[in-house]
Length: 490
Image (tube, rainbow, N blue to C red; front, top):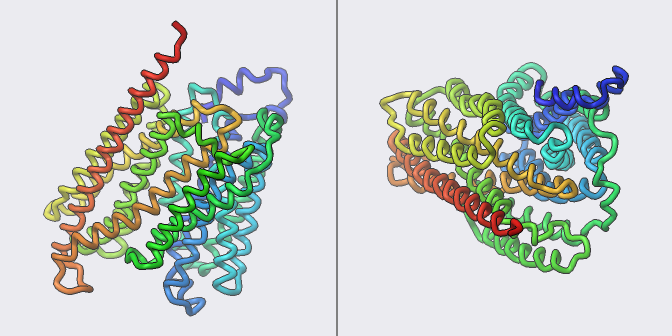
């Protein structure tokens, strides 16, 4: 909470107490943290309720899984458009609208009488989450000084990890005590508190909103949303088994990318200024963010099988051990913010990626004879590296963006992460399945040896990707530094 004390002290010594609270960077950062918590909690808490929803609605898993997919698809398809719209109309009203929409949709989810109405409400909730995710990062530059950007990014990263960690355990307790509707209704009081804090503390007017008079790129928005939805569906439908539908959706996504690029070159006010992506550091940061998210998805997809099959842990113990990673990420993010402020974002990105590569390498060497330690120690190293990379990468990108583009660039950062998670779920799951096939006793029985072998091959692949991300970050930093030198006047 000391992140913005300098701003507070330097603002207006003769302000009234109420005015001071209304412009308090501490309260503003608290509201942004709660918005981050809500959006991540909305993702993780619903997954634990799928078995209960199958029983409540008498529906198969293929139908019930859309409760999770609808939320993720809405975020993925709309997050960039949400950021661009906020740059044009002002971030404060859009963020408040997103919080209100998320809260209202949570009420509709909790009261839904049918499965498909619940799925529709989850899509609306995803739209609210897209607005919150796109704008929380964008607001940091207006909330704290540049010297404290890393600490603020670390706090938001910690809140995201806390939401991911808290979701399954909180959801399980709520379902056991009050039924499945409680996992959605719990968002209502949190949403109201977040809205109240945000409306009180966030700046009343955006400095750049008045200058953004361009028309909204509706064609680009529709094309990008359809393209991203096609890709996300291609990666998620079939539960890891690619068929004609998945291939068709990938082809459609490829065509969509081409059409979107053409539309952006002709639009008077494009959704994404393609020239912006020619910035070596920005494009490299987005690509690295995608690769890192792909790597981290392996811990969610593969680790449960390793812990349950290879180590023989029961379901309760698996849940406890799996919470280690998000817990380390939450604690590390706070430290990562201070390290980023002190040593610089680009240097800490490299350190974080190196730690990530070391951690995944150790996971690929996991020996079952070492027991739980064979997972906990490497995952702690991995998640520390991930938290350090995320914090420093976000700080590096957002600190170098003009005020009028913060919303769309924040949306791109979140989009690259979401696409990486979606890709990782499919890619890492497929690698694990292929690597463990030869060790299985039968088609349906995953032995301890099969799970251990699948774990090793999957994280060997993850290590290669992590090293590639590290090299990309180093090369882009060097290239960006050379470009800056050349641009300096002689």
